[in-house]
Figure (cartoon, one colour):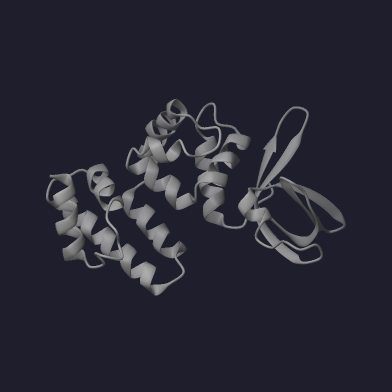
Amino acid sequence: MISYIKGIVADVEDNAVIVECGGIGYRIFATPQVLQEGLRIGEDIAIHTYLQVKEDDMQLYGFTSRDDLQIFKLLISVNGIGPKAGMGILSGLSADEIRFAILSDDVATMSKAPGIGKKTAGKLILELKDKLSLQDAFEQKLSNQMTNEDSDGGEAQREAIEALSALGYSGAEALKAMKQIDISQHDDVSSLLKEALKIIR
C-alpha cells in the first residue's frame, strides 16, 4: 500500500524516525544502522517502507535500500518470524550476509542476529534456501559494493565458485570454502580455485 515515503525528518526516536510528508508525521520503525546514518531533523529523506496491518494497529517499517526491504520481506515470510524479528536480524547482519549465510547453511552466522537462536536460524535456512540463488546473491553483492577493488574480488569469487560447481562440488561446499579465503591474498580466479580445493579436500 505504501511503497516508500519521501519527506522531512521531523524527529528521531530510539527505534523509529518520524517523517513529515504532506502535513502528516509518519512513525517509521527502523534498524539502528538507519537511525545512525546521520539523520538530522529538517533534512529530506526517502525511505522504502513495509506496512504491517493488524486488527487494532498499523505500523511502518523503513529501509534506506530496496535490497534491505526485499530481504526483510523474505525473512518475515517464514512462519514465526514477525516484523520485529526481521528487523532484529537486519540490525545484526547485512542483506548480503543473510543471503550467503542461508545459501551456505551457515547457522553460526545467522545465530549472531539478536534474538535468533540456532533452532530458529536452522529453520530460516531450511525454508529460504530454495528461494535464493547463488548467482543472484553474487550479482546483488557486486551491485552493493562501492569500490572497483571490492567488485573485482567479488567477480573473481563468483567465477571460482562456478568453476568448483563445474568440478562437481555443491554450491554450499564452494561457498563455505570461499568464505574461509582471505580475498586480499588471493584475488584472481586461479589462486582462489587452488586455495578452495585445498580447503575442500
